[in-house]
Amino acid sequence: MAQDYDLIILGLARWDNTLNSSTLSIAKEFAKNQRVFYIDKPFSFKDVLKLKKIDPSSTRRDAILFGKNIYHEVAIDGVKFTSVTPRMGLPINFIPDGKFYDWMACYNNGLVAEVLKKVIKDYGIKRYVFFNSFLPTYFNVIPKNCLQPLLKVYRSSDDISQEGYIAKHGIRMEKIAVEQSDLVVASSYALCKNLGKHGKQVVRIANAADPNLFYIPNPKPEKPKEIKDLKGKLIMFTGKLSKLRIDYQLLYEIAINRPNDFLVFVGLYEQADIDEFGLSKLPNIIFTGSRPIHKLKDYLCHADCAIIPFLKNQLTESIYPLKINEYLALGLPVVSTNFSDDIRSFEDVIQLADNHVDFLDKIEIVLQNFSDENKVQLVEMSKQNTWKHRVDELKNLIQQQLQEKGLD
Image 1 (cartoon, rainbow, N blue to C red):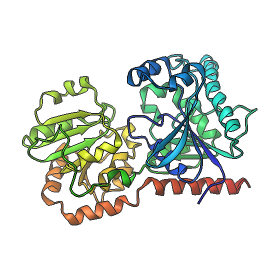
Image 2 (image 1 turned 180 degrees about the vertical axis):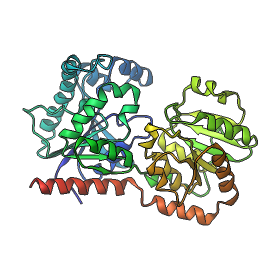
Image 3 (image 1 turned 30 degrees about the horizontal axis):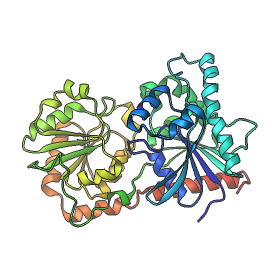
Image 4 (image 1 turned 90 degrees about the vertical axis):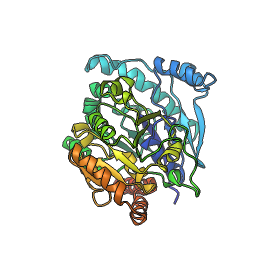
């Protein structure tokens, strides 16, 4: 059913971020029924240099440097939306939190305001919802002389106090974003509780998966080159490896205790981290590096077991991992550390471990006992955790707010 408002999105992750982005998934679902305008977080000088290295012919540089050609029509999986790129921002995160930072931030906010006003004019927007996804430092970007949104929505997807770089100003700015929003949503139980302390009701809209990205044809695709010649069981993790989240000591113990099997990691990693924990010296650990989300299934469909080896700390307590529903969509047995209320909500269908010994035991259990019946159960459960379901929940919340304001 078509909605009678446009959606303007501004998020921490740009639409073409190489990592799996929940914000992009939300944008795609909305774009199936209405116009979506995805505003890039302003690029820094460092970002521009990186962009030049990756794509020397990028037309985005005209927008970043000169404010020209700011629109890009994006088509992904048959869904279209409009990407909007502001001019280059100032590097201000190093400035101490306070009035001088706020004064400098006005310039960066003005860059977004500039393109927002232009979008509204160029596309004849009459009614829109402003959706800020975990970018509170750019929440107050709508000038008073601009058409105001029907609603301001703020979404949190991580504990901002635990994300070093953005915590510096993000903690204070997120409080302001929550207080000034008409609707606040968060991806985990812990985030709802934490943000609720700012005096607003916070609704949990959990992360999900796109089942179309994890459909496996019969026969399976050939094994990617990194795992083509591996013998033994394949124990796999997809996603970024980070000392803030990953229990590297656990990974070391899995590899040492299962010398005939292989741990395969598909995603970004820091060489210094894996060197520190001795992982680079173990012959049965494979690091492929980052892969686009549509390539993940080419690896996962050959896995015998998927793992979520998170540390149990304040950051992970707030995480509803995107990967859990991706694993389930493929019918993979999952062993995870017992790190949050959100992961515990899957305790009927996955194995949760309280310590390293328990984790090793649970891996052995699933490798020995997982059946086709178990696989069917996991796939069926994943069908309830799709981005379509999540966006339908979000649309209903928006509609309720519009009705309460007499704007429906």
